[in-house]
Image (cartoon, rainbow, N blue to C red; front, side):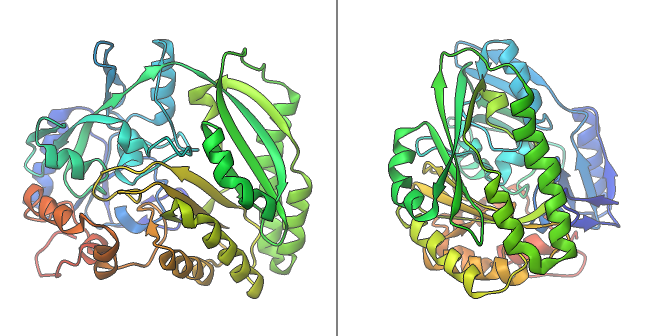
Length: 436
């Protein structure tokens, strides 16, 4: 049985296959077509929406990993689609290169991360899919199709965030930059002061994000800037902060909150008491990602950058009016606008507000309330996170929605890469004998 990282989404009846070559992948796709089975491709399972839920065939590209070629003349690297972000980071670093930016989790596959709109933070930095220079897809018939700004440009514009609905991504050409080091500075601020200064902090630093702890006035801030300073040796202080406090102790506190939900406000204040200033320097690919051992479910919304602070204030007031068993921090990050059809950042610089709930604890009313607030501020959902929008809602907030639907129909006319959830998401009618 396949299930995602949090255990929220599972496919107990699916067949899971792990091809080791392109011919084997093509053969599996043709077999699935003959058996009228839906096909979905899985990476690390870090999506919380049911994008991968199917009774058909789940393909893992774990055996199709690695950096295939580095072209220094064009500043690109060809990477097999199943390659984990952590492996890309170390392989590029060995060549004196790096990706421009990363999300805060690096166990995802590059195809999974880009297809759902994964991002880091930085008002001048786009989501990970904006670093794509070219792509290769394999259709349901096992045929390879290439996409770049000069070859199948509509597939390139629409396919960089494609939800796995256009075909199997087999290879991605990534724009790369010379390797660089980052200095992280952690701090603690009051909620109101932090939001008043947030926009200027985002402009002043390469990357800036904040974590607000519910039921408190405390905010953990993180800023990153490029530096020539030497890498900070791994020591006891970093171990205590990054592993002992953020994973082990926080995990214990989360388990306690699940056992005694009424203690959540007190536990959140306890977490706030542990926030302390600190700084260290590390290679970019190691600095930008964080080890997350505490499992949770998540919803995330992109709102226009100028409306983010008001949205977060409303979410805070909403939490204070309700009695949610909640002590998981809210995350607040910046992402530069782009022109990718299904990007939550299409046509605008954005703030992303992420809300979490510990695995196994109730989240529905909390996530629904946050969704309503963010929609009122022009919000768009992160495709890999929990939301309840349908096709009619999405058509109104994604300007290129109809263009993507037409592209999907052209790439997969028989719906081999669709599931009941995706049919509903795209507003397609269900019919007998369709893959599912």
